[in-house]
Image (cartoon, rainbow, N blue to C red; front, top):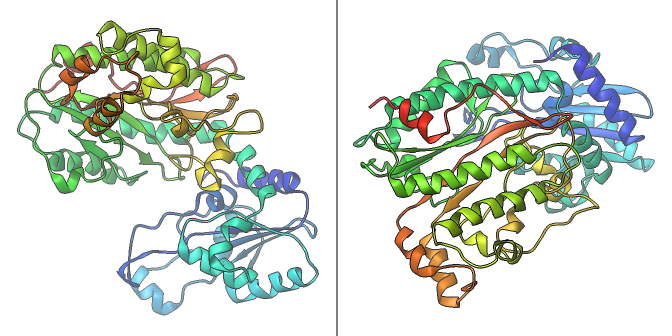
Length: 466
């Protein structure tokens, strides 16, 4: 938890931005695995945590009555019978006092408060939710069908929360770097442990044991796979592929700090001591693209423009290898590069790995100045709007050789003036490479956060444990 005054200040700013009415912030429920007594690891709703500071207790509501200047935490202290199973727990009153909330009431009283407000047509502002149990709860409280809950979420509140949470304070950056420093230890271990003959599953266990031993949890399911052309391969643990000499291993992982802030790092390493010459060629192109992004990131620049500059940088590299041809600026404008780079450059990072996107990806990454493209590849860009000092975001370009996509485009004759399909065929089994870091936009540029994690070819090969 951060300091008491910070949470109080956040709530005051929120009230000022929303203006009037009642703000209702929902804490998460525990989610059962197969019976109600066995639950998944509890993770608090990020916006509820941001304004309340209460991280470990489920089934809470924070009501902020702007017009009557009231802040009420609704919830129920656990019974003695429950404490037999959980041990002694702090009271809600003590948790609330720690963050400057002085009124705690039983959950049963919340519906009465809201019903009175609804009768006189007061505005009740709430955020979209992703969990079905919260949709049902809000439905019962507000008289809105569950499937219409998110459609009726407050646009005013969504805008206010995004404008507040997208700018990270110094305290928040410290928390992100705490998570990043554990990430650095994970990748240091990987460099020493990757070798031909080891399985994905063994490496995954070693990575996540570091997180657990530090008293943290992963920020999202770790992607650790030799099938690097699958952008989000969630099945690597089940597949348990064995690494071979010339394989690549892509690891996209994150850690959640104890105050609820995430890291998100990707590295691609060779299974053997060194990259092959072909792997070095593609790796160099991706690294050049990422370094171009880092060089371009600064306030008041559209992230979409940086994405396109990175795409052009990598497409020129592919042209040098004979994989692309023709006018590269035109190729990128038309989207031909998306055969190799079919996703966006990056996204916001904070309490969520894809920070704030539950409030609407277009609300977070786009605005009145810029709308989402419908072009393949570019349509997957999550963050396109002008950058501001205080944004924390990822820069994660990649190049992939996806056999199904290659076959589809080649059969359709797409972009033959820009793509040399005969040369691309030589890379059919290459898989892919992605490199990702987390960056803070400063007043004059950007800063790569956390301890340095080897990413140049020389650094990677010199730090191998084989």
